[in-house]
Image 1 (tube, rainbow, N blue to C red):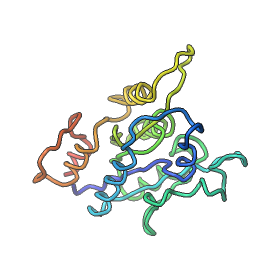
Image 2: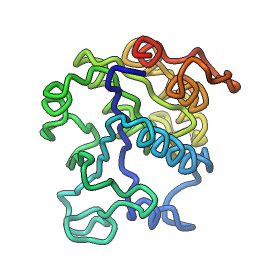
Image 3: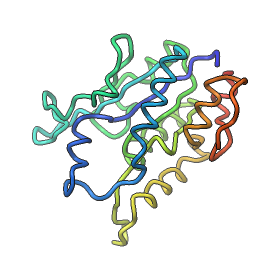
Amino acid sequence: MHRPTALIVIDMQEGMRHALQPGRLPPRNNPGAEDRIAQLLAAWRAAGQPVVSVRHISRSPASVFAPGQPGAEFQARFLPLAHEHVVEKNVPDAFVNSGLERWLHARGIRHLVIAGVSTNNSVEASARSAGNLGFDTVVVADACFTFDQRDYGGTLRSAEEVHLMALANLQGDYARVCGSDAVLDVLAGPTASPARPPAAAPDSIRSSA
C-alpha cells in the first residue's frame, strides 16, 4: 500500500467501558471487536499509515463523556501516539465542526478505513459523511459493535440485527463493508495469503497497493 489510507477509530473511550458494565446499556454484539480494532491499529502503525482517533465530548455536564470526566479519556489500549491526529466531536458525525475533512485533504488522504462504536450511531453517521464528501471509505464490520434497540414500531431488535442493518445502510451508497481479515491482507501486500475474507477485499485499499 503506497497511497495514504487513514484508519479512523471512533469513540473507544473509558466512558464506553463504563457504560458496558451490567445494567448500564442493553446487550451488545461483536465481543471481539476491541481485539480486532487493536489488530488494525497495530498493523496501521507498523505500516506507517495515518491513524485518526476520534472521541466524543458531550455538551451535557452530566454525561460520562463530558469534558474533564474520566470517561472522556481514551481506553488505554487505544491511546493515540504523540504524532497521531485526535478529533473531538460533539455529535455522532466525526466530520461536523471537527476539522477532520480539512485535515485529511491537507495531507492528500482520500482513502479511509473506519472502526469503532456504535455501528448505527457514530460509525454510520461518520461513514455517511465520508462517502458524501467523496472519500473512498471502508467500514470494518467485525471491528464495530452496537447494542439492542427497539425499532420505530416498538419491536426489540438484537444488537446483531441493528449492526447488520446499519452496515446494509452504508454498503454501496456510502462505503464498502468488509471484515478485518480482508483489510489486513491487503495492508500486508500482495505476498500475503488471503485469510477468510467475509467480503471482497476493499477496493479503496487495493487501489492503493
